[in-house]
Each structure stands twice: as C-alpha cells, then as structure tokens.
Amino acid sequence: MWLWFGLTVGLLFVEIATTELVAVWFAVAALILGIIAAFVPSLSVVWQVAIFAALSVALVLATRPLVKKLMKRNKNRETNLDLVLNHTAVVVETICNDMEKGAVKINGLIWNARSENGENIEKDDLVTVKAIRGNKAIVVKNEKVEEKTK
Image 1 (cartoon, one colour):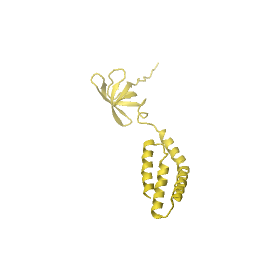
Image 2 (cartoon, helix red, strand yellow):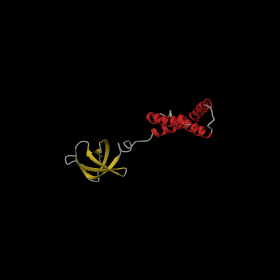
Image 3 (tube, rainbow, N blue to C red):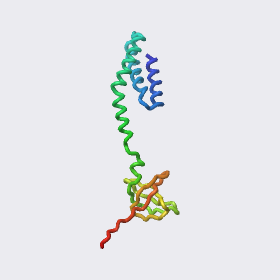
Image 4 (cartoon, rainbow, N blue to C red):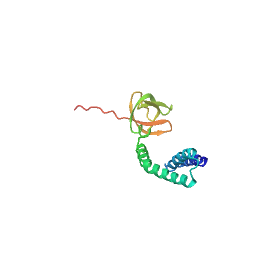
C-alpha cells in the first residue's frame, strides 16, 4: 500500500518536471491502486501490478487525447503583448522623451509611453503602439486624416 502512495508522489514530481502529461496518468493509477491495496490487503503483488497496468492504459486511452486537445486550444490564445501591439491608444499624459514622461491608455489600461521617433505627442492625441520595452509602450502619432474639399 505505501509503495503505491510513494509511487504516486514520485510520479507527480516527474509530471511537474516534464509538464508533458506523461506521468500524471500513472500517478492516478498508483493512487487508485494504493486505495485498493488499503482495503484489500490480501491482494497479491502480481494482481497489484496487473491492476496498475490496466488502470494506467485505461486512463491514458480515455483522457489523454481530450486533455491534449484542450491544451492545444489554450496555446492559440492571444498574449497580453498581442492585445497591445499595433493597437490605437489615447495619450493621457503628454509624451516627452527628453523629460522621460508620458502615458497612454490602451484597452482600458494606462501604460508609461515614449515616442518612437522622439517627437512630443500631446494629450488626447491618438497613437499606435509599435513596441513594448520594459514597462513602456513605444508609440507613433497617428496621421490625421483631413477631408479635402476641392
């Protein structure tokens, strides 16, 4: 019984180290077998190993494809960087690289900001986020589209 609980802990450490969903199924099988062995102490070692093997195979076949599919879907999510780069922001504090000040509001969050080309950008101007350096958004001023009436 204690062997199976020890194996459970060891396999969980292996899973934490690898993060590839390999050992977790065997850890669960070992845990289940430890519980079975606690209630049926007369179960022979041969039967314990056979049950462990059967549980391990059943768990892998039943759940691993589903979990891998769910993990793959989560990898396609946008990161925080993707949600900021090339997006339009509003200057909430005049940007002046020389004085190392300025801030923009991007998707409801305030970021320290600096101008990509060093120009001052006034409060309430619209800018596009070109990069993130440390905790600062590097921005360029949006070109104003003026209607031509000719």
